Length: 366
Image (cartoon, rainbow, N blue to C red):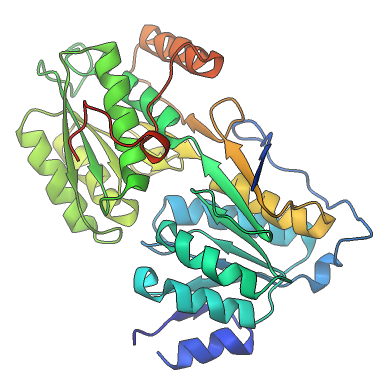
């Protein structure tokens, strides 16, 4: 049985595992770059913040991915500072197979709140949560049924549509340094799943809506931690004429960015603003505000307002997804066009395909 890596001192139930080796509501997260409120509001139903026991289950790729997990951890760190708590981070080298056991042990440890970042543990959480009704559970990425489960669902397809649109505008424009005349872009996913394909399909739709002649190459690393696999996937696409590759592969995706930098072309980052990794090589990033969802989870428990059985939708309109800083090499006209597309998505004029809700479209081969 693989060992579970525990960051920090946990309750006895989770330590033992380490040793043995509804309804819909809307949220209004802060706008891009804004910080959530700096202090909790007390309520009679809320536990004292200093007594709050919080754990967060880290997803595949682990902390240090400079992407999904790290941005979520920023939200938890901010909540610790604002609410005077000390939260626990739980990592497993094999979270997919160990997820259910780990969640059950976290429940036995009697945390007030357990935040689950791992996409593959949706079904295990639905089974485990009812066993621990005194624990509040929050899940990222999918709706999970349960009276004590709050789901945060992101419109990654909408943000990815904008990334694809920008890529289609830029590719082929040889006036931009690093861009060749071929109308070819790419996207590298991690492990193939509907969660990853939700990004990919949105990206393809955005690119081909802007320019039907653009070819979108796709591949998967089947890994969220090995940067060498991301590098190899990106290099194969560059050899086929791609000059922009969108990475959706966590830590493995860091190899995509490095390969783009070395080749003098572009990568599109994911989940957080990845431009600091390679400022000249990152065209933009599709930012997914997991930090907001995590922070609001803790705040809700502190204030006694976290609604079990609810699904909170974090889309473009709510500020849950967005494009990060756009490379200065991109002409303002292209940026303006992307902003117009964003407004059309928000208004409903453009409908972006969601594979989780709609299955796979004809333009994408599973």
